[in-house]
Length: 273
Ligand SMILES: Nc1ncnc2c1ncn2[C@@H]1O[C@H](COP(=O)(O)OP(=O)(O)OP(=O)(O)O)[C@@H](O)[C@H]1O
Ligand SMILES: [Mg+2]
Image 1: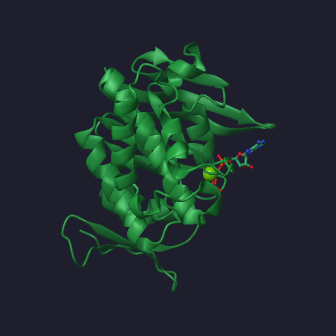
Image 2 (image 1 turned 180 degrees about the horizontal axis):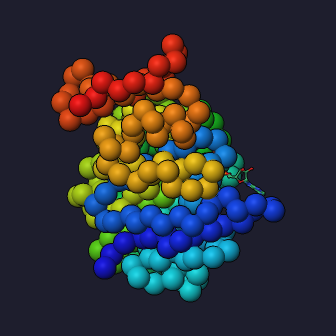
Image 3 (image 1 turned 180 degrees about the vertical axis):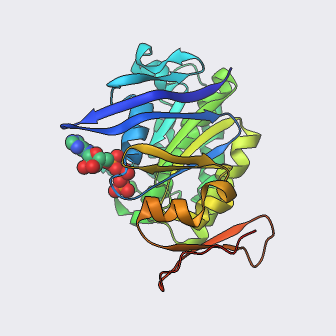
């Protein structure tokens, strides 16, 4: 059974459990959004699924195998990670940064890597920047390059095993509205067309509601809700998790969708049906 899952996972950081008995399942073909307030444990959850933080109890399974039992190379060959803060600051050519995604795949031919890079450059809308150097890019452009690097890694993994998992920690945080939409739309399409299971940590509730098949609401290290957007995002749960009243309305432009608004007047009633 292909899935990337956490089973009653608890993770300790400092003197506290920042993830507490979290069980979530990411399947191939779906985009799951992880939402929650600052400090809720979203990056810690991603860190545990990336193999960077170890479980205090419970476990992380990837396609039925314990992640802890896989070495770093084996992990990199099945899941790609975009951290919240990408550390790289070297002044490399843009395509060299993107090609790094293929490093774990020594058997890939240069032609294959060229092909993955070309597709990923388009998926991150970077074609006009191809001659640029990494050190001279804006924050949002650099974020899109890291996104393209992760896509190359996922494409290489899917070429090797038939599917791949992608973990993205706030991939749209520095992007303008058009590129936020662009990135989410692409992940939505590629999850299905290229057999990716995608987990995206984000803060924009409406962007998540539009493009994610499922929303995991995390609060104080625990899952407050794990369901399709229209079920997970209720005024009651949103207020519990975010500590502020919100309204959930039927989307004015699309049926089946909702729109979440901060309720500045404080009455958290729902008119979504
Ligand atoms: N290196 C660390 N040592 C100790 N505690 C840490 C460390 N990193 C994070 N924490 C704590 O773990 C908790 C969860 O942090 P995490 O980064 O997972 O939150 P988050 O949900 O990703 O928040 P944000 O929306 O701000 O990115 C926080 O209370 C934080 O203070
Ligand atoms: Mg975070």
